Image 1 (spheres, chains in turn green, purple):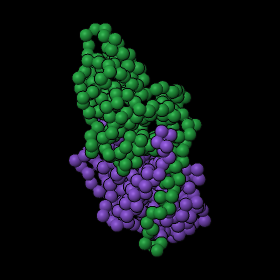
Image 2 (tube, chains in turn blue, cyan):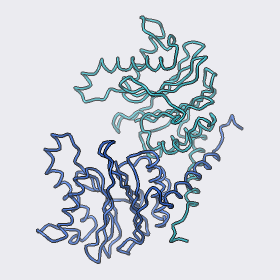
Image 3 (cartoon, rainbow over the protein chains, first blue to last red):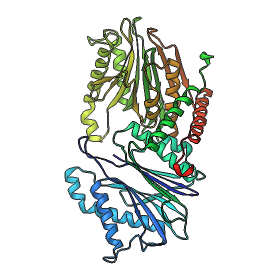
Image 4 (cartoon, rainbow over the protein chains, first blue to last red):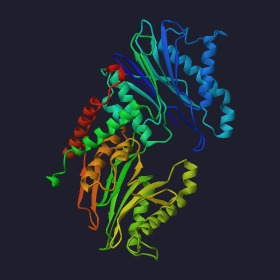
Amino acid sequence: MTYCLAIKMNEGLVFAADSRIVAGIDNVTTHRKLYTFRPATDRFLVLLTSGNLGTTQELLDLVGRDLDGVGERPSLRTVNYMFEAARYIGQSLIGIEQGYDAAFRRSGINGGATLILGGQIAGRPPELYLIYPEGNYVAATDETPFLQLGEFKYGKPILTRVAVPALSLNDAARLALVSFDAAMKSNLAVGPPIELGIYPRDALQFSHRLTLDAEAPLLRQISADWHTAMLGAFQHLSRFEWEQ
Amino acid sequence: MTYCLAIKMNEGLVFAADSRIVAGIDNVTTHRKLYTFRPATDRFLVLLTSGNLGTTQELLDLVGRDLDGVGERPSLRTVNYMFEAARYIGQSLIGIEQGYDAAFRRSGINGGATLILGGQIAGRPPELYLIYPEGNYVAATDETPFLQLGEFKYGKPILTRVAVPALSLNDAARLALVSFDAAMKSNLAVGPPIELGIYPRDALQFSHRLTLDAEAPLLRQISADWHTAMLGAFQHLSRFEWEQ
């Protein structure tokens, strides 16, 4: 399983991904799930991946080949809007999935992948899209400024409470780490290292990119801070009437 | 969907259940999922239900008929251990499921149910069991003193942090409400009223039993307390090194 998260604020975008791939409990490996593209100086794109690892790796190969300009297909360089980038990724994705459809059906394997694409093309606002295995997409909005992939439930309650467009980039990055802490504490299929990327609006590059392994002092400190705060908060909840 | 939770402490047991039944998004109804049995003065049992509503209602009907003494089947009155009660419920459950198996297969309907059974038989300790659709069971332990049914993921992180056998009954009841608040904020399929039962060891009855609807001051207060505490805790997390 996987956990990926992206948050869209007025100040920019924050991306986070774990690195654990589980193909049965005796086959656990580590793979990156956060990829960046700067195919021209006017644009910066980030892709977070979940689902079938073969499908997502082949997708990255095809996206790279399209950027090399072989053939007449569009690419992340030729699109004019972020939504066109999302459509391009979605179409590439279903092309791969369809090619293996009969074989996957025979094996009973789910070959689908779900992706988050974010970034900015100069002159337009930053955008964030969730791309489904069917190739279609939905955008993050002011009302729901975050998108998640994979094991999303454990880390969702804190996002629902805290994630708003007015959040600063640093606060959103901290929020992402708290959300990952909840997911990692609850599910062994979500595991470090955590990749974290902070994208300030109009920067066309990450201002900070961190790879946090299980022993990273920052990850441990945020986890310990949050744990202590939770226990403290719990002690100060209202009492039942029969306790008064 | 459903969310049910039971916690086992040194002082006793706490049970909580939502009341929402979703059979498609246009068919949402309210049904109790927490049932108590005191078939003799030496025992008190609580059943929390999830899964196919037809299956769980028929189970309750059969459990009631067995208590009436019709036929020669065992019942919640005749068992000598709580684990025997769990086995009895599990066997009754698979008997029902098997009777509809062919019809459910034709319709593609999941007729299974998952249950939590807890309580105490005088002279033995309180126990808590999760009963699977296959009829087998697992017990709550000191290491994992809580059991959940249904939409369990949203409300699990706080349980993982706070639930220990040394928790007082009132603290465990508050913890249950916080866990339900997370689930209800994240998933419309979990909804009030929330039924809450507090069982002190050796009492052989609930000391408190509450039915909390969406407007219940206690539920709103706990939710507001927790929300404020989360936002406050978030403000006090460690900063990134580039912020210092």
